[in-house]
Image 1 (cartoon, helix red, strand yellow):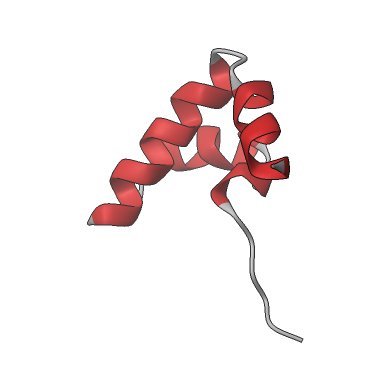
Image 2 (cartoon, rainbow, N blue to C red):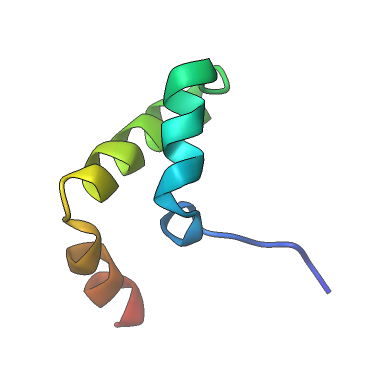
Length: 53
């Protein structure tokens, strides 16, 4: 069974931890920083609606 998570599925507290300790470098860093902002601003529901379609 493949281990596949979308960034949307990762809980906010992981992003908070990464923001304190440092995000991975590169493209993943940018995506995780943006997802962290989305989650702390409460906009996660908008993305969940798009993913369900």
